[in-house]
Amino acid sequence: MQLNFLILIGELRTRPQIVTGEKNFTLRELDFYLNGYYCAKRNFSQLEPIEYEFRQYFEKFILKKFNVTIDKKRVKWETVITENSKNDEDSIKNFLDLFDEFYKMILNKELEKYLDEYDDDDDDENINDL
View 1 (cartoon, rainbow, N blue to C red):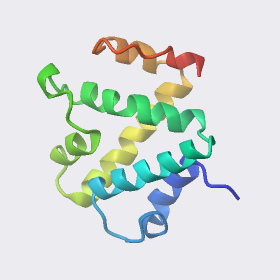
View 2 (view 1 turned 90 degrees about the horizontal axis):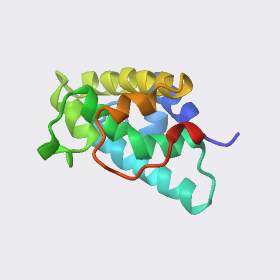
View 3 (view 1 turned 180 degrees about the vertical axis):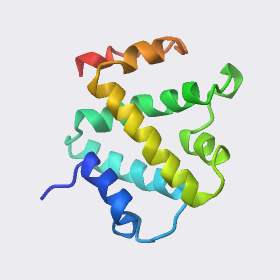
């Protein structure tokens, strides 16, 4: 079975040590892992739409969700979630909840409208066309 992003997120919920090698880890460590995963999939031209969308739009989604101001837009999603969580375990739970919300918006084709209100003048392609 080939690993895909949604399976990876599912494993993160139930058996995080299979994904990260550790039962307890930080969002920063997860971000490093996901970056490596993304690069490997991209290098073999095996990116799925959700992997592209996560890489391109999740950070913008988080910044809007937490009302991060324009001057702080270069803050990473993992930092924003961590700063708004009680501890590392809570930050992982919050990430998973936020990912669910993000993915639901993609499935319902609501993400583009949501992010348009927070547009930072990027020339992103229409995400509903992916």
